[in-house]
Image 1: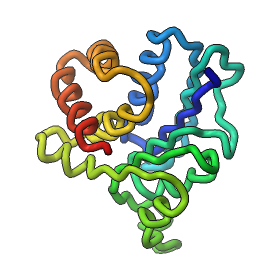
Image 2 (image 1 turned 30 degrees about the horizontal axis):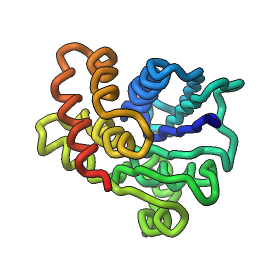
Image 3 (image 1 turned 135 degrees about the vertical axis):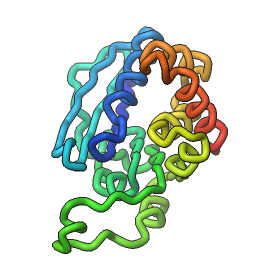
Image 4 (image 1 turned 90 degrees about the vertical axis):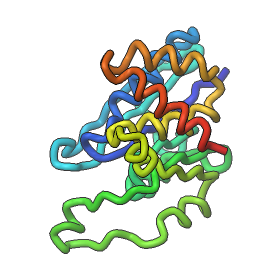
Length: 192
């Protein structure tokens, strides 16, 4: 197996680091060599956060170069657009939470939030759009939207659903295990 390169992108506080840890533990459990890298922007101020998860028989370095990512998991649609150029040209896919968080440049009036992001993503790559934030609110667990997005992505990553659930059990805080498993199942069911 050639290595798989996954990018998880979002805004500070959206759970990109937890999500990368779940995926990393899953890949290790499946016997792969795994490298993780976390790139923090202005995370505490709502800035961009990127994590790379690379796994395969042997992985030399943790960073995914532009044009080399197989999957882009995005917790906010502008972040998906911002990192789209990291995806491989033909075979890569995007799983995106259709949610808007205005960056500081938009809040201060320096820039405008781009229109038509989801359409642009769909034109560029195979894209699965998930209303994860809304689904998490319906569940009464608004912070679990990241695991809903992960559930949608999981259906396309070649690991067994039961293995994902086992890793979630051992990775999330104990009091949140059941809600996170429910969030994962919700995302898994939403994915096509």
